[in-house]
Image (cartoon, rainbow, N blue to C red; front, side):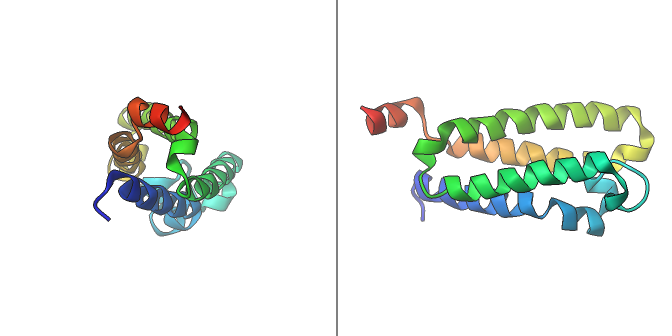
Length: 131
């Protein structure tokens, strides 16, 4: 399992499962994974995010079957994770009640983006696969 495609397939599957587990993670560590006071299910916003990440998790798991055919999804996850982490970090720094995110989901999102960026199929590989 040392070839890049096998590692990418593994990463997509693991990150897909983790995205499916955002809700349980917020129950275990709310200050690092949810943006509100009180139980996670009290926030309509948070439940919307859980739904989006659960859906994305399913598609990441499906993308693991053929990463080369799912480059757009992989790059969406890379860039949206970077943007999400940056916005969340700025908001957490400016609100002391949200500092937990600086050691919770902010580094997790940066890790996801970095790993998928590193393991992503290159343009050269994609050109060979399509042409």
